[in-house]
Length: 231
Picture 1 (spheres, rainbow, N blue to C red):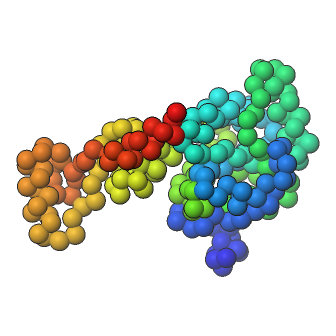
Picture 2: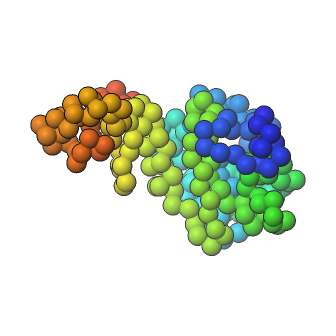
Picture 3: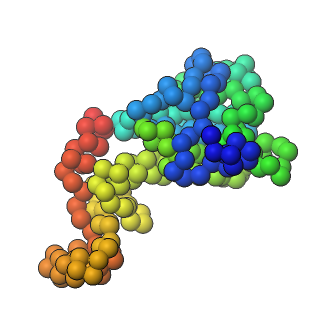
């Protein structure tokens, strides 16, 4: 394990997600159980909190859409498993909604600190409001951090997973406000010769503004792959 990660819990994009073995509302779970699937690991500072309750409901309502793109959901809180169970049962009793994914009981904060969810300079758990998108190879691809008083926008998390999958499949990038099935950005040329070729293509196809920014339609395979996952 990386020394900085071991000492500071300072995970970075592109790193292997730290392994863990945890007690959850669905039983014992290891990170390696999700091998071959994308994972959205999100945390909250405590059970029976108003913002996080709305997020549990929202994630559950969206869980089928994550499942369609080979993505699992996994919650985490520093509360006990008994508290988690009481919380999800209360949500069910009040709304009829069954939380459809496991919630990790990280009572001693070991996993939260391993992932850098708790600041070393702050002793309380108020900083435990993170989202980690981990790809099907176990690599951390996105880290989002939210304040206590702002709920997460689940469609953006879903869109980000789709954008990452499309960028990987198409060997391209996604532009600002990209949505599924929209064109992707072509990697910029690395030589003067290809720069000239790219400018000629843009002039002919009207698919960009200059050699460093041009677009292409996503390969049919990438569209088909996401369509297959959406069935």
